[in-house]
Amino acid sequence: MTTLSERISQSAFDGARLRVVLLLDLYDGAQDQFLEVYEHMRRQVSSVPGHISDELCQSIENPSQWLITSEWESAPRFLAWLNSEEHVATVQPLHGCVRDTRSLRFSVLRETGKAPAPGRSPAPAPVASAPRRGDGVVRHALTFTVKPGSESVVAELLAGYTSPQARVDEKTRLRRTTLFMHGNRVVRAVEVEGDLLVALRHVAEQPEVRALEAALNPYLEQDRDLSDPGSARMFFTRAALPAVHHVASGGPDPDGVRRHALFYPAKDGCGMALARLLAGQDEAAVGDSASPIVSSTVFQRDDFVVRLLDLHGKLDARPALALGVEGSHKAAVLARLVDSAKDGVPTTDEEISRFLQRSEMRLITDRYPPAHD
Image: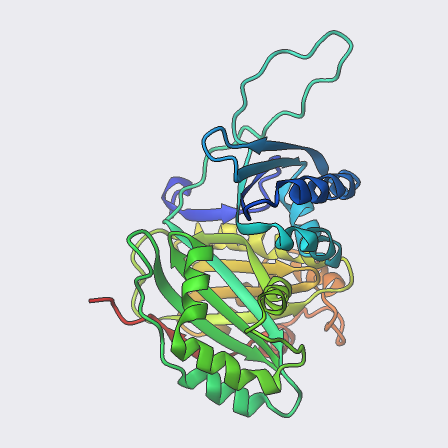
């Protein structure tokens, strides 16, 4: 059995408090405007469920560089706000005064501080869990819908584009891009070594990618103008599909491993609970030497959940495991959480297989970029 220390893993479900760090580089002369925008943001965010505190700092070396740190009760609380239209509206005024931003998120693992004063409640304690082992890879996805009837044309465009070079800079490299479709929905999953934002900006600037995006524009359900920074930013903000959980065996992949994606439309308000259910099963599955699951990544935004599996053998060899419901009562829990469970609770292998077949996304392309000379 694979031991916990050997696993590669990341998770938003550790139960720890979350520290969010936002690095900002202001336009020249924009300080007063920024401070006014920040005060408005601070008042808005202070009422968001799960928000604990925030702090604004200015660099003592370069006054154009600022830092906002915020603390949240948990990562799911923060992600629920991050993925909301309220967040999009709240941060919109920042774009007029900020040249560049970078957002970092950390689970609070250990903390040293003074004892609380008499009569005051102690600060919430960090979770005393072991740190997770990473592999230097950031996983992210984008999702969007295309006009019904255009699916075959879009699939052909997505399968035929030329991949950009893998190397972005000395620290950042594109590792893998996988594209899936389910009906008229597209999911593009990317793996990056180094800085995700730097990699995404690099990819967006490549002529072959620009040509692909221009060819896709007439078929998108949501209009966009990538030549307009504001329009492009809004589109990609709403298309973002964060990875909330990833676990992998940590060893070399055995022969015959293939990548699959499953689509789970959750009921209203049930997306995070559904992602947590799937993550819990895959944590156990990857630790089982008899399991065909080599790695699993769960992406979730609002009530939209995608589960990416690297799996040895056929997807339907163990349909309950592939669907994420192997074990007592898990199928019943899944049926309560998903919006597509029209046939009730899948109990038999045949019913689970049909559910699995409906959930599977169509693989369009799975590629590694060409190496840089």
